[in-house]
Image (cartoon, rainbow, N blue to C red; front, side, top):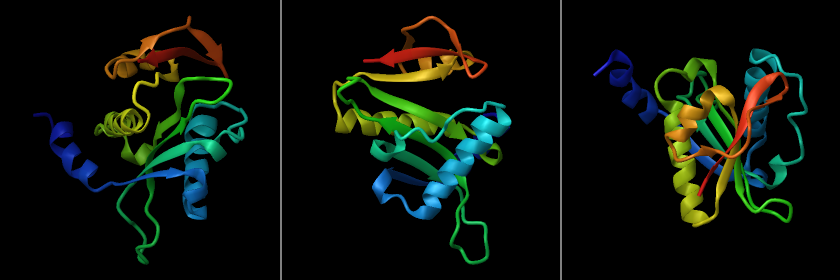
Length: 168
């Protein structure tokens, strides 16, 4: 067992998982979600784009919160996040997007656990509905391990190569 594998289980066990519709998110959760998305996608990946796209309102949100770090015990740092868009009149697939782990929580398998949890929930709630995501092209192998296969050519979006992937 590697050092990373040895320390991963306790770190993952410390996380608090929240699966919520937008209207059930607290203002603090919305702030943490938007701040993390801005930090990862806009600042870290240097992409200027319209993150607040109106789709959050009808989406489900998975938040992984780290152990509480302030003295009041009130605020827990956001470790990971993703959103799930449900089928609608324009698209019959469920779509996973805005998948991220924050810098402090990288390197111990949080992305794997987050995707496993979301897929388990999606398949239980909406069995048989295809799931699609718009992956950064270098993550094809990661998503492929969860049954996703490319359904488009690699194309550039916001200066980063992406590919649409789908799982039945």
